[in-house]
Image 1 (cartoon, rainbow, N blue to C red):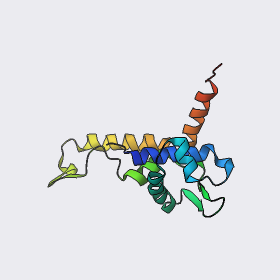
Image 2 (image 1 turned 30 degrees about the vertical axis):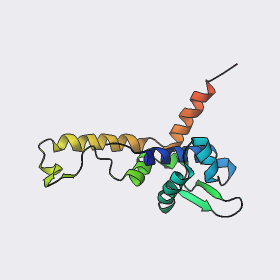
Image 3 (image 1 turned 180 degrees about the vertical axis):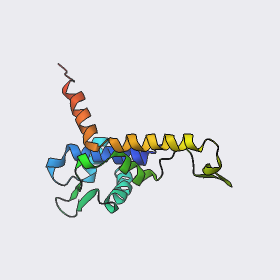
Amino acid sequence: MRISTKGVYAIRMLIDLAQHKNDGYIALKDIAQRQNISKKYLEQIVSTLNKSHILQTNRGFQGGYRLAVSPECCSVGRVLKLTEGSLSPVPETMGSYSIYDDPCYFVWQGLKNVIDEYLESITIQDIVDQLTEIYANYYVI
């Protein structure tokens, strides 16, 4: 299993929106600038998140994006499944060979269950809270 930049950037975008949730709709260019991500790439990600009702869109002047769900209710697992598809550690099929024919199938299934459970247990708000705690202890003179 490998998480692509699409999945990582989707999570970063949602974190940014959660951190700025009191600012109303956020322009994509602002998110792109703060997160150092191409606006064009974020446009592709927005499409996926918008279809799944994680984002709300407002067009025109003062337009942009905001979370349509509470950050406490949006798990990292949900976002990664939307952007990456399967989070299985091994492909379901390898040519004519199926994972179900593998004598170690229960190992791979157990690993997938652990990954799914872990990623579903972490919300966007958990990450925001962790970042807030880290930055609160970061003091520069």
